[in-house]
Amino acid sequence: MKEQFILNFILGILIFEYLLDRVLSALNERSSKKPIPEELIDIYDQESYDQSQRYQRATHGFSRLSEMVSFILIVSAIWLGWFGALDSWIRDFSPIEPVTPLIFFGILFIISDLLGTPFSLYQNFVIEARFGFNKMTIKTFFLDKIKGYFLTIILGGMLLLIFIVLLTFLGTDFWWYFWIVITLFIFGINMLYTSLLLPLFNKLIPLEDGDLRSAIASFAEKVAFPLTNVFVMDGSKRSSKGNAFFSGLGKKKKVVLYDTLVSQHSVDELTAVFAHEVGHYKKRHIYLATFMTIIQTGLMLFVLSLMIMNTQISYALGGNMTAIHLNLLAFGILYSPISRLLGIIMNIISRKNEYEADAYAATHFKAQPLIEGLKKMSKDHLSNLTPHPAYVFVNYSHPTLLQRIEALKHLVH
Image (cartoon, rainbow, N blue to C red):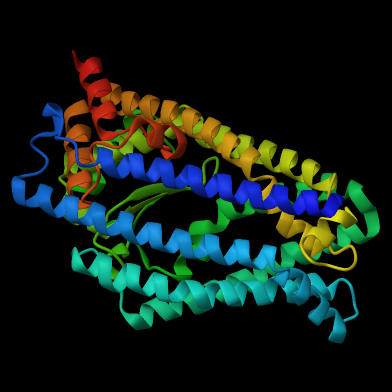
């Protein structure tokens, strides 16, 4: 039967994806035990290196466990027809078709979160805490979850409802119109992230006057970067790990520095990090990434339109009639090989962009402070300094630390 073939194909994809990830992770774990390259020998002393190895073992081991549990649950649910059974149960008391997918995905979201919460708690309050990274309280953890529920219900529910309405009235031509909706949503999130969404979770305080603000403002003026404001975010309420990012499009861009980054790095190092981010802006990497995301979304929606009304797919997941929510669930699996391939291409482009942003920072500011800043961040994060090339190729959006340092030193010399 055709639905049996579809079921086997879905299970085959899940098994292939799981085994591929396990092989890549095993290669990466083995590679993390290699001697540190000479260029990076000054990052870790022996005690710090031993600690980084323990951290890598702990995170790899926990990742293996959580991925295995997730794999067993999803394969069991598909093989035993649990998703079809859930669909039938919902239809017994909710005959209104547009409501059924909302209830279906709402229940799956709750079940997934309940099952995932113990793993998140262990990850943060055992592993991350053991190595001094976790600064989050139990209260903050669950408040974040409640806020996440709120955003998922409002934003996710709204998008799903629009999808259902468009599909109901337009049939398989829905994808053009929903593509427009998603594109507007992407631009909206880019514009409003630091103004509306981020403040729900973190405090943003304008960077106070001083050497750092003066250095950043001076560099921005030198390269004609439209600096509106620089914010410091209280990332330390959750983790000791630091980061920095831009948000917004056009001249409404905001620079956000984690307070942990500000406290752990010199003015020159932070200015170099800022120069790197300006490099992304000047090279139009952000616009390119946004454009490619929109194109990928259009492709995904077009492929979805080819199978969203396929009755056999619904039957393959245990349904007894065409159910768009069952088909959406199946599509997420069936499309995953294409998604992985596109992800690899995006990572290749992203790594190229990182080299260009590094080169911009080195050319328009200084290379050495950026090198020192990258080394400090790697040490502070207990990063794997010797990741496996295959793992990097598939999963890394940034070049490895060694690759970035070698490229920067090549520019200087």
